[in-house]
Image (cartoon, rainbow, N blue to C red; front, side, top):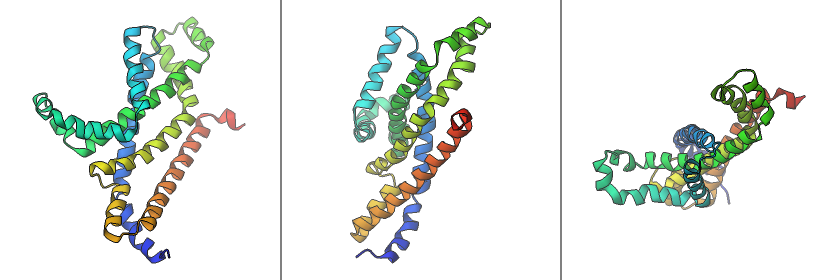
Length: 229
């Protein structure tokens, strides 16, 4: 039988891992968005030598599980410690926190680049031509005309990617990070009450994602008032 008192006992403990969950998700989403934007813009050209490596990168990170990517970055690169020490990067890859950030950033960057690439391609070509005809160069046309419209169009799809990243932070527990899922696993090992612990952890993720979705919905409504009408 489920004990309500047990929930009241474990929920504060699980909430102690929420700041790390938010930190992992927020940092990876921000860095991943910057990476995605650079990759999306780079693919707008026709140079095969620039586009092909990006598409290979995207295919690898979209085609393999995030769990495998975290394992390879944390455990796999650890086997190259002398080489990483020689270039001064061992401090980065020896920390599970930064390995989780790198894996989450590269993963969301790959997915986000495809979202942004499609949104940029969907901006009517006539708008770019009109901007060029008015005297704007290609850089200003992209910055002032194409990107604002593309980002508005990409927001609904990118909202889903943000939610996936929040849930993806739960995988960071496999490399010893004590976010919400990591604390849940510790509680299970102490109490042997997996059902109640995972129900409580799932409720925390559910409420968190609901608040994020609500906030992104309000942002979308503010950026696209014409759709509301």
